[in-house]
Picture 1: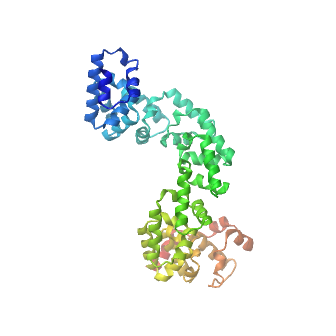
Picture 2: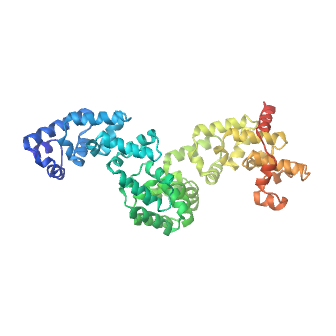
Picture 3: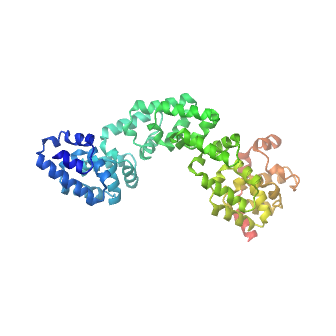
Length: 442
């Protein structure tokens, strides 16, 4: 009878055996068990679960068939009273069906422990919703795991960040966690880099060590140097989750757009987030820049210098051009400046405006058209160097010698014997000067 009922609802033979062999359910009379199955399945259906979801919930936690529908409703009400909305509870049950077997008192104790660690109520709600399995661990086992991870070199705050990031560290053994750290260090990462990777993406702890090393080695085979791979994965650790085929396919797609293999490697190593964007989105960006009047050669050079341009929205590009023209530059000026220094698309207009106003106040604004890189240093450093050169060095800054305001820090220090920190301390471009500069322009 039980087999027939479960088959009727779509359970596999393996799932049926798992349910029937459950120790608690094996004590039920067949008639009672059959009636309970029907009632629970119908009740779960009334909550909004589909056929496959019901099979998943009841197969993972067969004991649910021993509960009365009123008990399940009460458990759901308890979770809602703790601060979760029904939609969240619905998903939590799907992720961790066993949560219906815990009393509210037990769940409250876990939450009180988490709060004692320093988590806010909202933080606890967020990560227990993401990983409700945390309620399945005893407080003593959680405390031990925290101390174990601290012993590896993480601070208490870093451990708490790892726990709340969503990946269920409590399900991994100490040796499994240590093994991931050791394999990355063995490849060439520093421990600080490993910490940065895992704090950004704790999912790395869930990967196989041999799989990680195999992927890193295959990336080398694709043409990336070890230092490029380390730099990329520290900045964008989700790369560890990509299969090599995904990486290779993206490289082929970029080559099809006209970039050669070395240029593709350069783009990916500088902008590893490129994997998050479809080739259609990237092509759309390229075509949009061409429609604005940039040549194919310019667009290619711009994206090689500043691959993050692929992540800049079309609206942001349009607005940046409009706002720079509002500062007095012509359309051709803006195109020339942004083609030479495309990273200007990643700088706020207020930042650019402040620098332009200062340079305009000392007669150097026109220099920025042919030397847009002059808009890269901070206005504080520009001002400090200008005051130092015109004051202590008695230099008359002209279009011809203005380059000294913008040379690299090491060269400036070598030529004039003063460090950046000393300059900024001596000549402060404070709020009053900023306000005065903006006032003059208005």
